[in-house]
Image 1 (tube, one colour):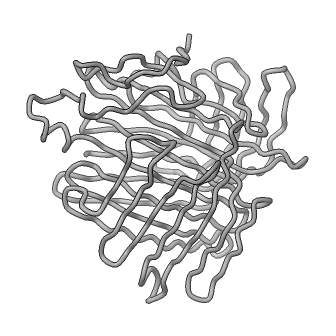
Image 2: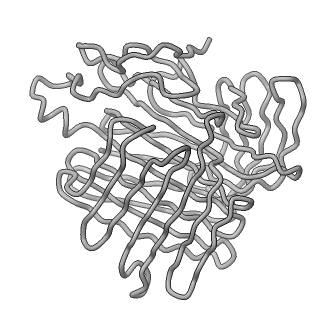
Length: 344
């Protein structure tokens, strides 16, 4: 019952509607925001577009997130660093009017992302079968500068999920998520230095473009790590926004190969986020228990924008049935699950 998109073409037709809702292993559709026709005035359509590139780096000891976003009437660049052992988080955000300082291309597979503002510089570049992330953030923590230079490998045979999701008739979400990109490079923050190695560090990408309802809600769960036998494992699970009758974003990746899943049954207690979460799918292939050990709360309150995110970091345990029928145990896989409310 899920529509897989296999034919290249434009994302939107001349009426501003999705040409083909569904999912793909690699991006097939060309993002063409000039075709958006939510309002007669094109300038108003630009103000309603939301665009971002969010990268996460997961290791057993810490997590680093880097993001550049343009939500139409504001640009936001943010970064956060979580030390799992101490439970400390440092998070900083720079806001610019009308997306000033943000450069976000129309493709997730080519073109470079840049941000410059308030002394902060970020760049996410494409190299041959890899992505290079660089950031310099002065006074990130108590006068200390955050600097990172990371290389995420993206082999040709690495599956990922691309979603074209309708939100009403002329709103949509075009999303590309990549798990399990082996990472290398360096991160420095004051006297902290991490030499990032691909046998313990994995990068992930959340690339999003679209027009949402002003009041929106979603859940997202993700993990990128390793099985005891050394194979990579990735999870991407989500629900809560748009018309998901055409496709879901739910998938498990083993050694870079996607195992596509159907509807997600996600159970947790909103407001008591540190309690265990459970995740199953309608076909019975996925059975997970997520036990949080850290809660990140992020809120933004501007004139037209307000968001509240509860992003829980924890460990996934349970089992998953592969396409070939093999039942794979999952134990203590570090990842996150979130509840997100937005008025934007």
